[in-house]
Length: 77
Image (tube, rainbow, N blue to C red; front, side, top):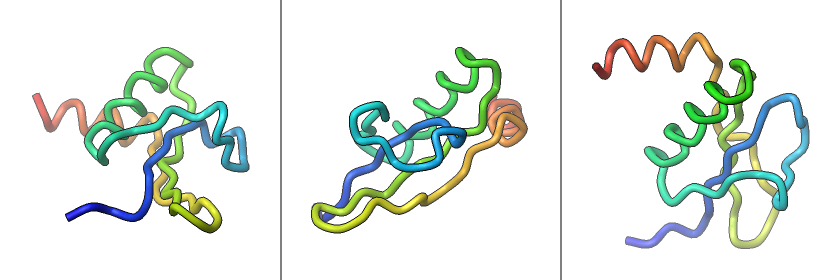
C-alpha cells in the first residue's frame, strides 16, 4: 500500500510549513527519530510533524514536545 502524502518535521516556532527548511521523513518512526535529533541539538525546542499531501496544503499533524520525547526515551529503553 502506498500513501498519497509525505511526512516532514520542523520546529514549532517556525509557524508555517517550510518545504525548503524542513526535514523529510520516510515514515512516522523516522519522523519521531528526526524530532529527537532536533530536540537534542537545538535545546529542546518543540517540534511539529507535518502531513504533506501530493496536492493541497500541508497540515500540522502532530506536535512533539521536549517533555514527550524524554518520556518516550525512558519508556523505550
